[in-house]
Image (cartoon, rainbow, N blue to C red; front, side, top):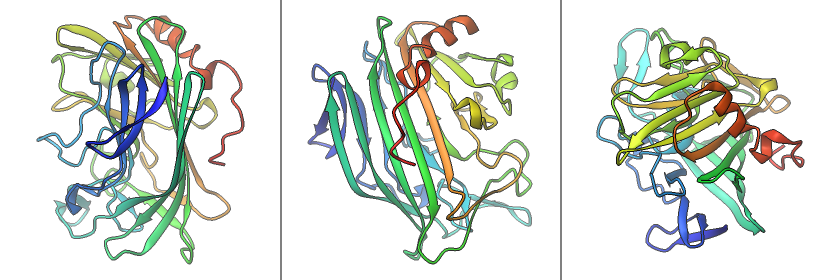
Length: 305
């Protein structure tokens, strides 16, 4: 396994024997209304199935695997419309941009890593927040399987006393607590198989504090699964939608805003196992996760801290 560079997209990423598994798109080529930001897409399985979607017609601001919030101090870093209690969802000129700074990539043996800073800037160019982000790529002992981790620490920018991270749900839109690390899946079968500690199906997982979430879809007639896991000590409610589109992630502001100051940064982490094949049971999902290097054994100190 090795870090690779896609000359066509000018984006670093990760590959196995020349086969790209994850491409890190950093060009910020999206329109302002999509809240331009770095993101991972395509993310692929070892068999070549693409398990992310970016810029789909239904939600052009959904960008593969990314970190996004609908409201940080009044700036929309999610993209699309902004929900207000007074007038519902409206497209406003309040979209922010995430700009990478000082990123480095490395590969040691079978493991790859990218890390660096991200400046969260308002539509006027003011730096609201600063972030240190880390992306890690790992082999997995199970055939047809590999592992991925994304971690982040976000603090207020210079001169910003506090960040208030909100969501449409906090402002009155029922069920719309999305915001944080978000995985947009591609359109696959009409009936994805979704499992969590709370049972089967999206309704069981939505809003739950399950430590993990498994999503199996069929692409090209073959099943492929992404098993997602949070840090057990810092569980957030899962936002998951399976009607109209398929997307999921831990929700930072599910029912109330998150407050961030220099002494209490916002820490995020999501671990993933990408597996060619179905995951029919909770026991099988846990088995795959237990072999993820960031889950199965104590990890080295997280340099995003």
